[in-house]
Image (cartoon, rainbow, N blue to C red):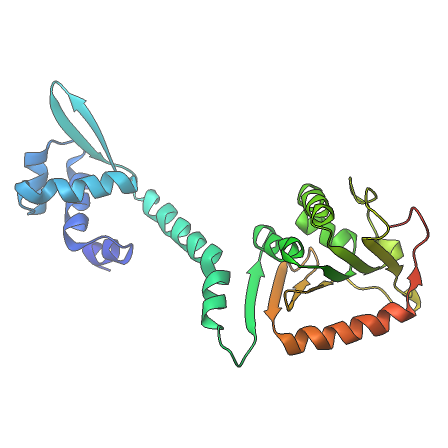
Length: 252
C-alpha cells in the first residue's frame, strides 16, 4: 500500500501525511526543509504541524531561537487507532440506545466489560419506589465490585427505595453495608436450590427497565426498556418469590 494512502487510513489529511512523511525522512528539522520536502506551502504548514503535534506524532523543541520538529515513532498511529476504537466502544451503549429509540419497540442497550456493566447496577438508584432482583451473588458482585455496591446500597436507603431479592444461598456473598439496612426496605428470599443455581442476575427496575448481568466468564450485560417485558418479568418474579424461602434475621 502507498505510504500516503496508509497514513490517510489512520485519519491524516493529504498534507498532514506529506508533512509527517517528510519529517520521517529528515529527522529533526526546521520549517523550511519540511516545506520543501513535503511540498506544502510554508505559510500554511504550521496548521498541519500543530495538529500533528497535538496527535503526538511530532515533537517540537526550541533551539537557539528556532523551532525544530521531529517525527515520533509510527507506533503512535496504532495507539491512536486503538484509543479511537476504545472511545467508540465506550459510546456504543449510548448510540445503540439512540438507534433503538422508538415509541413502538423496546429500547435495548448492550454493555460489554466491567466498567460498562456497572451502568446496569446504577439503575437501582434511579428507581422511584422499588427494585427487584434475581441475584446470582458472588458472580455479579465480582463484576460490579464491593465499593460500587456499597454506594448503591447507601443511596437506595437514603432514597427509601425498597428492595426485594431472590438469591442462591450457597452463592451469596455479603459486602460491607449489606446488613446495615431497615427490614422495611429489604426483603430477601432464598431460591429453592433443588431447582439448580444460576450465574446470571436479573434486575427489575420500576423505571420500566429490566437488566441482565452475565457471569464473570462472559462479562456482558443487556438493559431492556419495555413496559411489556417489565410486566412479564415481574409476574415471573412474583411466582418465583412465592416458591422461595424467606431469609432469617441476620441473613442476606
